[in-house]
Amino acid sequence: MKNIVITGGAGFIGSHVVRLFVNKYPEYNIINLDKLTYAGNLANLKDVEGKPNYKFVKMDICNFEAFYQLMQDEKIDGIIHLAAESHVDRSIKDPFTFARTNVMGTLSLLQAAKLYWESLPEGYEGKRFYHISTDEVYGALSMNHPEGIEPPFKTVASSEGHKAYGDDFFYETTKYNPHSPYSAAKASSDHFVRAYHDTYAMPTIVTNCSNNYGPYQFPEKLIPLFINNIRLGKPLPVYGRGENVRDWLYVEDHARAIDLIFHKGRVAETYNIGGFNEWKNIDLIKVMIKTVDRILGNPEGHSLGLITYVTDRLGHDARYAIDSTKLQRELGWEPSLQFEEGIEKTVRWYLDNQAWIDSVTSGEYERYYDEMYNR
Ligand code: NAD
Ligand code: DAU
Image (cartoon, rainbow, N blue to C red; front, side, top):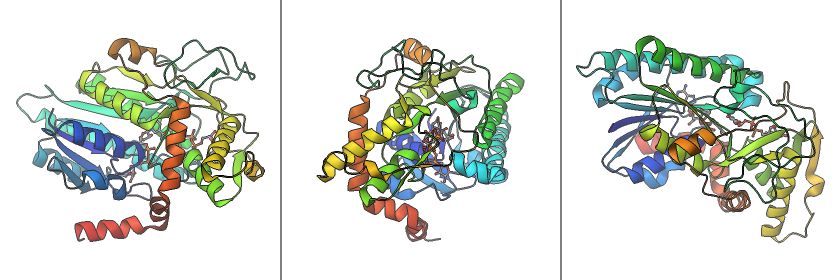
């Protein structure tokens, strides 16, 4: 597979995947296909812009004809599909946009790929449709150990003395049970991808990953939003009691897993990706406060008063926790970064890149695109 489309490459995770592929595989043609919604930002990829094996195409994944044409023009043999509406709170306010992009957009890509690949003499030989999904499709796990218990596994990502807050985990075999419009739309898209394998024998793979954190995440998500608010001395809106648990993975470790699975994963399989690194929101928020205060030279505890408990998210899932032993066992993947190290790096990145935060939240990146591509 040499001619590869990465959809959603201008977003948070997509930009890390594009950067990894462009730098690691000079012999590939990497096409970053992105609509540049509010969440897509070409400034995430300034360092790869001029590389000969990289091309950006502005396109909506729902545009079937345009994508079918691109498949033919570029002789695409691999698709890594990340483009999506990704923010749960937005899905609660505007579910239609989520159904359109996440469901219809994915279906549109699948159908265009099917028509093109089936028209080739070699058919599906050497082709791959890799769909990036989320652990949220599995629903919510119970918090039957609210004080925390010794977790079944430790990884590099697991923080010092970390805990599990329940004795169940999401496995590849866990039944889908999505709750939010976002996760319902992602679940639907996962089913369509599997249906294209089961019905047409398209070589597909699906992975379901836990919460990512790191540079270039749009500052509406918990970690970048709170780092920025602590810096500015603004309130930190904690949903409910801050007791919900999320399982955090450094974004570059997710990108490395995607690279490995795209090349070596077994067709028609599902792989869970996560680092066994559960955190209650409120504990994670306290770590961010401590880290930002230390780096900014504030006295310890200075920003704790910014914590503001607000009305809970509707249908707020209690706990996510991924079991990724299948990926570790089959393909030897391991997270590379310890959580405390990852948080330190992340906090420093956002504090050092205020101009990036300002530009992605001001719409400047739209103008940047127009100037860059003269449209
Ligand atoms: P993001 O919101 O940062 O980026 C999404 C990208 O998709 C943006 O560049 C946006 O412009 C593009 N896009 C949106 N609608 C489009 C459309 N109709 N046509 C073309 N491009 C469009 O999202 P992210 O956090 O980087 O997530 C990427 C993928 O990974 C998503 O599929 C998401 O469900 C999945 N995922 C995310 C996480 C996480 O913690 N962020 C965890 C697991 C899985
Ligand atoms: O689990 C993977 C998912 O992780 C991805 O599929 C999603 O695309 C990604 O957005 C993320 O979803 P979450 O809803 O878990 O992430 P978010 O950063 O929005 O919220 C993390 C937790 O923090 C969640 O329990 C809600 C809470 N929260 C969030 C925000 C934005 C707050 O308490 N206050 C906030 O202001």
